[in-house]
Length: 105
Image (cartoon, rainbow, N blue to C red; front, side, top):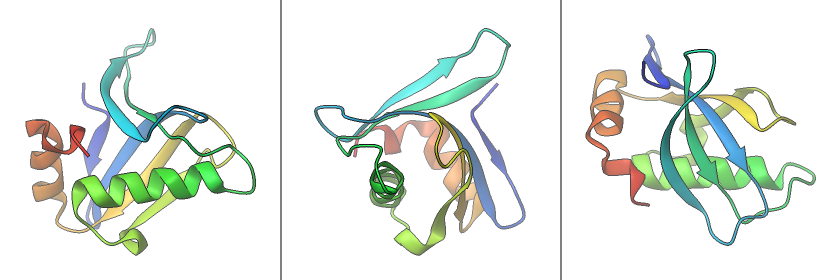
């Protein structure tokens, strides 16, 4: 099972975010105990006043080569487990995610 799903507007990603990391990076896919999977991200920003969410948006924007305005947190704004929507060509974004190319920001 992949942590992303193609939608009519782009892709939806399920993330596990760790703030206060040494650097911003995407670590890869993690299988959860309930059978689901998430994409693990680490960001250097602190989880204060939306700074970590802004860092997540910037990291995904940079690695998927979409504008920041195309990335939005749709659930989990104050939690480590987040759902993020990325607007654009969903098939192309999913192919890029599947190929592992965005895992190297």
